[in-house]
Amino acid sequence: MLSSEAISSTTGYLLLKLADLARARMEQALLPFRLRGRDLRVLAFVHDEELSQRDLCRQTGLDRTTMVAVIDELEGNGYVRRDRSSSDRRKQVISITADGRTTLSEALTAVRRAEDDFLAALHKDERCQLHHQLSLLYTAHDPRCQPDETPEPGV
Image (cartoon, rainbow, N blue to C red):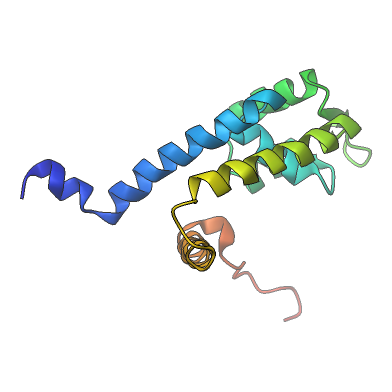
Protein backbone atom coordinates (compact mmCIF):
# COMPACT_ATOMS: atom_id res chain seq x y z
CA MET A 1 0.00 0.00 0.00
CA LEU A 2 1.35 3.41 -0.93
CA SER A 3 1.88 5.91 1.90
CA SER A 4 -0.83 8.27 0.60
CA GLU A 5 -3.27 5.35 0.52
CA ALA A 6 -2.17 4.28 3.99
CA ILE A 7 -2.92 7.69 5.49
CA SER A 8 -6.13 8.29 3.54
CA SER A 9 -7.48 4.93 4.69
CA THR A 10 -7.40 6.01 8.35
CA THR A 11 -10.51 7.34 10.03
CA GLY A 12 -8.50 10.08 11.75
CA TYR A 13 -7.30 11.45 8.42
CA LEU A 14 -10.84 11.49 7.05
CA LEU A 15 -12.09 13.25 10.18
CA LEU A 16 -9.37 15.91 9.85
CA LYS A 17 -10.05 16.51 6.15
CA LEU A 18 -13.81 16.66 6.69
CA ALA A 19 -13.32 19.05 9.61
CA ASP A 20 -11.31 21.35 7.35
CA LEU A 21 -14.01 21.24 4.67
CA ALA A 22 -16.85 21.72 7.17
CA ARG A 23 -15.04 24.62 8.86
CA ALA A 24 -14.56 26.36 5.51
CA ARG A 25 -18.27 25.99 4.71
CA MET A 26 -19.33 27.28 8.12
CA GLU A 27 -16.92 30.21 8.00
CA GLN A 28 -18.26 31.13 4.54
CA ALA A 29 -21.83 31.03 5.88
CA LEU A 30 -20.84 33.39 8.72
CA LEU A 31 -19.16 36.04 6.56
CA PRO A 32 -22.32 38.13 5.99
CA PHE A 33 -22.67 38.46 9.77
CA ARG A 34 -19.05 39.58 10.31
CA LEU A 35 -18.51 36.45 12.38
CA ARG A 36 -16.17 33.50 12.50
CA GLY A 37 -16.87 30.16 14.12
CA ARG A 38 -15.19 31.13 17.37
CA ASP A 39 -17.24 34.35 17.51
CA LEU A 40 -20.45 32.38 17.06
CA ARG A 41 -19.39 30.03 19.85
CA VAL A 42 -18.88 32.94 22.27
CA LEU A 43 -22.20 34.54 21.30
CA ALA A 44 -23.98 31.23 21.91
CA PHE A 45 -22.47 30.92 25.40
CA VAL A 46 -23.47 34.46 26.44
CA HIS A 47 -26.93 34.16 24.91
CA ASP A 48 -28.59 33.01 28.16
CA GLU A 49 -26.38 34.61 30.79
CA GLU A 50 -23.56 37.06 31.24
CA LEU A 51 -20.26 35.32 31.84
CA SER A 52 -16.81 36.42 32.88
CA GLN A 53 -14.03 36.23 30.33
CA ARG A 54 -12.43 33.47 32.44
CA ASP A 55 -15.66 31.43 32.41
CA LEU A 56 -15.97 31.95 28.67
CA CYS A 57 -12.42 30.68 28.16
CA ARG A 58 -13.14 27.59 30.22
CA GLN A 59 -16.46 26.86 28.53
CA THR A 60 -15.43 27.56 24.93
CA GLY A 61 -11.90 26.18 25.07
CA LEU A 62 -10.42 29.44 23.76
CA ASP A 63 -7.25 30.79 25.38
CA ARG A 64 -7.26 34.20 27.12
CA THR A 65 -5.47 36.08 24.35
CA THR A 66 -7.84 34.75 21.70
CA MET A 67 -10.84 35.45 23.93
CA VAL A 68 -9.84 39.10 24.34
CA ALA A 69 -9.55 39.46 20.55
CA VAL A 70 -12.91 37.75 19.99
CA ILE A 71 -14.66 39.92 22.56
CA ASP A 72 -13.02 43.06 21.16
CA GLU A 73 -14.35 42.17 17.72
CA LEU A 74 -17.83 41.24 18.96
CA GLU A 75 -17.98 44.42 21.00
CA GLY A 76 -16.83 46.48 18.02
CA ASN A 77 -19.67 44.97 15.96
CA GLY A 78 -22.16 45.81 18.70
CA TYR A 79 -22.93 42.15 19.48
CA VAL A 80 -21.74 42.07 23.10
CA ARG A 81 -21.11 44.42 25.98
CA ARG A 82 -18.21 44.21 28.41
CA ASP A 83 -19.00 45.46 31.94
CA ARG A 84 -17.48 45.26 35.40
CA SER A 85 -19.03 42.60 37.59
CA SER A 86 -21.25 44.00 40.32
CA SER A 87 -19.96 41.35 42.74
CA ASP A 88 -16.24 41.63 41.88
CA ARG A 89 -14.98 44.88 40.36
CA ARG A 90 -11.78 43.14 39.16
CA LYS A 91 -13.81 40.86 36.90
CA GLN A 92 -15.35 41.78 33.56
CA VAL A 93 -18.58 40.13 32.46
CA ILE A 94 -19.73 39.77 28.89
CA SER A 95 -23.38 40.05 27.92
CA ILE A 96 -25.10 39.83 24.56
CA THR A 97 -26.83 42.88 23.06
CA ALA A 98 -30.14 42.95 21.17
CA ASP A 99 -28.18 43.14 17.90
CA GLY A 100 -26.10 40.20 19.09
CA ARG A 101 -29.23 38.11 19.75
CA THR A 102 -30.63 38.88 16.30
CA THR A 103 -27.31 38.16 14.62
CA LEU A 104 -26.86 34.92 16.57
CA SER A 105 -30.29 33.69 15.48
CA GLU A 106 -29.72 34.58 11.83
CA ALA A 107 -26.17 33.20 11.82
CA LEU A 108 -27.31 29.89 13.34
CA THR A 109 -29.93 29.59 10.59
CA ALA A 110 -27.22 30.17 7.96
CA VAL A 111 -24.92 27.63 9.62
CA ARG A 112 -27.72 25.03 9.71
CA ARG A 113 -28.32 25.58 5.98
CA ALA A 114 -24.60 25.17 5.30
CA GLU A 115 -24.55 22.02 7.41
CA ASP A 116 -27.55 20.62 5.52
CA ASP A 117 -25.76 21.26 2.24
CA PHE A 118 -22.55 19.72 3.57
CA LEU A 119 -24.34 16.58 4.77
CA ALA A 120 -26.61 16.25 1.72
CA ALA A 121 -24.93 12.98 0.71
CA LEU A 122 -26.39 11.34 3.84
CA HIS A 123 -30.00 10.38 4.47
CA LYS A 124 -31.72 11.85 7.54
CA ASP A 125 -31.21 8.65 9.58
CA GLU A 126 -27.54 8.56 8.61
CA ARG A 127 -27.13 12.19 9.71
CA CYS A 128 -28.66 11.35 13.09
CA GLN A 129 -26.36 8.34 13.45
CA LEU A 130 -23.32 10.41 12.51
CA HIS A 131 -24.25 13.11 15.00
CA HIS A 132 -24.78 10.53 17.73
CA GLN A 133 -21.44 8.79 17.06
CA LEU A 134 -19.54 12.09 16.94
CA SER A 135 -21.21 13.17 20.20
CA LEU A 136 -20.08 9.94 21.87
CA LEU A 137 -16.51 10.49 20.72
CA TYR A 138 -16.53 14.14 21.75
CA THR A 139 -17.83 13.30 25.21
CA ALA A 140 -15.26 10.53 25.60
CA HIS A 141 -12.29 12.69 24.63
CA ASP A 142 -13.00 16.27 25.70
CA PRO A 143 -12.16 16.74 29.40
CA ARG A 144 -14.77 19.50 29.70
CA CYS A 145 -17.44 16.86 29.05
CA GLN A 146 -16.34 14.64 31.92
CA PRO A 147 -18.35 14.71 35.12
CA ASP A 148 -16.72 16.48 38.02
CA GLU A 149 -15.39 13.72 40.26
CA THR A 150 -14.94 16.02 43.23
CA PRO A 151 -17.53 14.99 45.80
CA GLU A 152 -19.84 17.70 47.00
CA PRO A 153 -19.39 18.82 50.60
CA GLY A 154 -21.33 16.64 53.00
CA VAL A 155 -21.62 13.76 50.53
